[in-house]
Image (cartoon, rainbow over all chains, first blue to last red; front, side):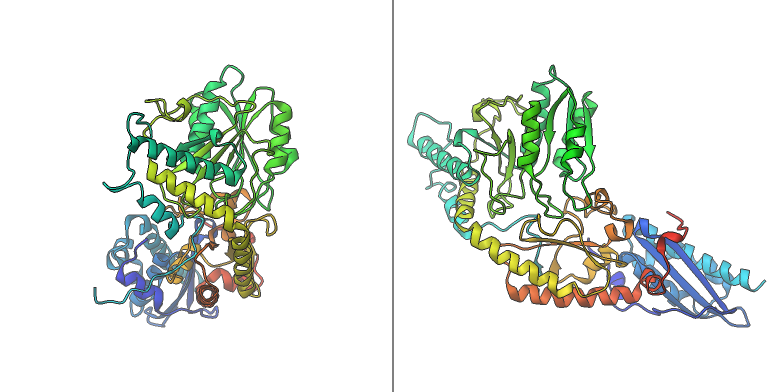
Length: 125
Length: 408
């Protein structure tokens, strides 16, 4: 399968790979399933002002899934939780020029940020 | 083109082979305007006679490699057509005797889909599970046979995992029960000794392009004593003893014949060399953690190794290994997002089925290429495991099966 330039760039130089230790100000979202061939783990570090200071990811999946999560970590940094949740999978798919069979990777990324925000909110309510 | 293109290392010989140069030069003798380009069926001039002689020589070469009589070789467009002709042809001819067929879940799609078609026509098919090592349990096979079973179709060498089925034992069981036995041997000539004079096999499918011949040509062995009868699937001029009409593709057939002739001469030394290369490749990666071989390691052709690198997803691994021409599963399934159905049939879990890579070596594979392959693979697997949340969980001692995943 031929990949787009941006997918290749994120795949070869993934941004913000890593993990945060579990803490109050960390929200973790893990979505997907090994059975389907992709699992995405996204973590956000949220400041007192409710702005995402930092984000990291780890992804088991195809190049498009890795690229979608890598791009997402770049996008959510500096955003409020609401702004981060407003990111749509179609924006990710468009930015990376994902082919139709890979749209589910961007959907997974959208799920991941929502799960991370929900986790953070559950911890801090 | 200004950009320098380096050809990837070709390790996908089970998918297809280049045509051996010696084969190409034989084929050229039957193509151009100054060649012996005639129709082998033309009886009225020398163009036809020469072409016919070439076809018969090729037929003999094919027969010689597999211990058959040349009269038992029917040329087709490839192993897929041979499988279709054998399975549907036998089923249609014998429909009054019974309508039950037995096959295995790890067969090639050409066999499985032919069986599916027969199911739509009212036949009943039993798809057997292989054992964990990819081989068929003879007891399970025997138990599946019924009084109305007319045909069993079991492949010789599996295209994904390279395991060799015991077709002699399976054939004996079929003979005792008077069940017609078809073997898809697309992957085995030149790799495994075949002697049809002694093997209890009624029908066997062959391909040319898996053995350094051209694509678009294959053959079906149809036993003469006792005679196996089947209904033609392609109707027309009555070529190939009425079993497969269509003008014989002289140059293709000559190519197949030459490829089989060369294989007979060279298979012993070639297999010895390939076994060394395969062992070298496996030795180069087996000390890594969570590396699994798919399929039996001993009952296997020399040039195949299928490995799962656990916690690394196959497609991303292929992407990281873009210097290698390899496949995840078989070429026929790599366009889809499904994990290999062959590995699933072996009972491999989802992670392992998703993380498999098939390396198949052949005539032009060099030791230096294997060295580079080992280096590439180790680097790619390490990189992707760094990225893998599943690898972290494994390292933390978390059982992945204990987690409730949200399937999507």
